[in-house]
Image (cartoon, rainbow, N blue to C red):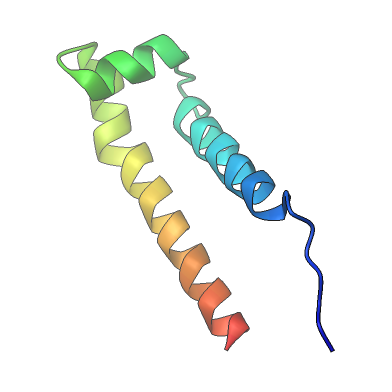
Length: 77
């Protein structure tokens, strides 16, 4: 039996992951605007924003993506 998938399923899921990633970087105890996020990641920006992003939020985001991917692979086996 063949299964048919919706052609927009994968792009929609990728867009949802990107939206959640942006939200994860922007929201927290200290909310950061998209301009501050880009400035902190692109170069010498606000020291507080850079410290928050580089030390806390980006590692948490990457770890969450990796753990989610591994759980997805474990469930797919």
